[in-house]
Image (cartoon, rainbow, N blue to C red; front, side, top):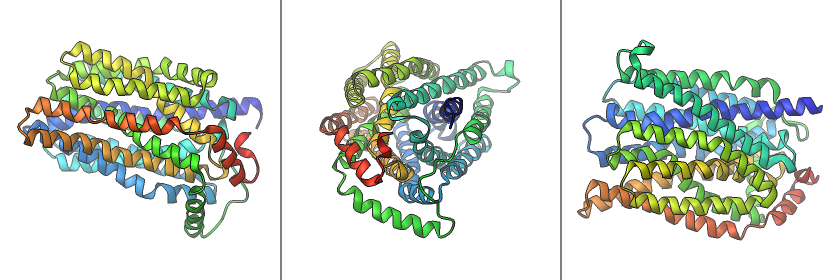
Length: 439
């Protein structure tokens, strides 16, 4: 591929972050938690609605996590990562738009559509992430991965800002109510996601590692998955990193998905929570790029550890805060590290895996990430319910729930400290049989 072609492929790849981050921002972190509490679960006790939201996030994680490694293996053997990406993206796009039709009080249908939409979002990311080694050299991988997350923050933030404006001034946009504007925002997300997926489909080539299988893909995928499970037992670096990632990314994703719900449990008004989310988005854009540059200069693992340390402080601080101003300060702190820890984790993992099995390995990577989101929201919900049963107020029990997340950051950071990137690269080169992992 020529240099202009490489640059075009790289930029087109990052635009998928721009595309699907609209879902992560407007739906997952923004409107769904608020609308779920105020519209689809109207009149329900705040603790019960929190538990229901945790259940929805956990179910969505289980759906993808169970199938991710096998799907990745099939995509690797067939050389069709992009086709799988399109399938899951389309699933997410359609189900997101369908939220527009869910009636007030129908929390069950809202959960069902949300679970499938998140499965589409998460499933698409497996194959999107697996394309990173094909669009960025080893030396540029931190930067390109961070650019993708930065684009996601900017694109997701811009659409979210428009959606917020629509809900604050519904009449100016021709809506009869705020609820109508929020429901239309789900349609906007679907359209945005679909349109900005097109550059990746057109300009990012399907990577080729050997001759792809033309038939018997499921059987070939099963065989590759079994072989990899045997191999991965001897890849100490990959195993240790995945365990560390499982723990600390659980905390990150839980904060993303449950922050608005937690703020509402403390009595903060929804407009203040939306402003905090916008702070995260627009601080996250330059911060993600800065983390990419610092990762190249100071070391990827070191900068991930810095981000984990900041999250540890955030989780403790969140349990003690009392004012909206503190919530804004926490949002700013999250914006500084959220994109960085996600982007550098992705690029770090891409360095220690065989490139010809990238979709399968990223299937494991995303599987653990999704199983982590099974644990995190359930942990918050379970601790909150147990605290409430023990006689605590709803507010105090919510504080106990959010504080429990700190354990995950602490354990994940300790394990990551012992991960050796150089050893992981040597293991990947040996398994690939070509040294391509260091290209």
